[in-house]
Length: 134
Ligand code: HEC
Image 1 (tube, protein in one colour):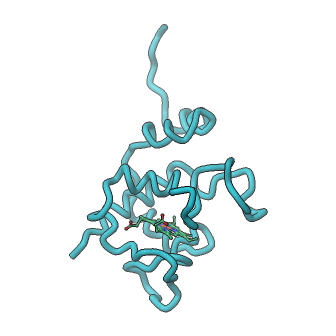
Image 2 (cartoon, helix red, strand yellow):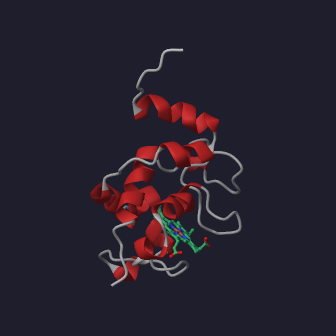
Image 3 (tube, rainbow, N blue to C red):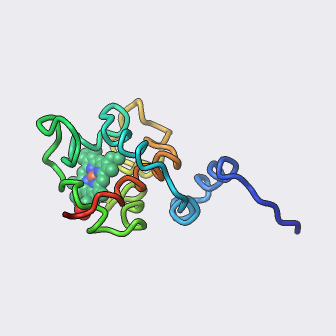
């Protein structure tokens, strides 16, 4: 069977059908850290700062339900950070940003589609790895 290179755009939909483990393996590409920072800071898009604090403006508008994201890149590997976003502990209040099934109490606006695209997840991970402990 001939082998040809495929772009990530071609791969992504098939990967999503194929399962989250494959997403985790195959989207290990460099993301855009500055876009990742913007995604986290955008409460409407990601809601990260409803629960987390971190090195962002307006600390009084950040949540205290979850550990600070400051230093997350020193505490967790890139793979572990990605895992948190794709498949958090099912007992955690932290939502999956990739899953579309097996979820509980999904808001109407998120039903049937992932909260973030694979590229956006790459970008968020690329930013989180830069958050080093002082
Ligand atoms: C509804 C609340 C909630 C939202 C929204 C949320 N998280 Fe979390 N997150 C948590 C909680 C609680 C934990 C603590 C561990 C656990 O419960 O899994 C956590 C853990 C983490 C960790 C591991 C921190 C550590 O030091 O161990 C990372 C990294 C993380 N979240 C990133 C994010 C990012 C990035 C977003 C947005 C894309 C986000 N979280 C959105 C609640 C949330």
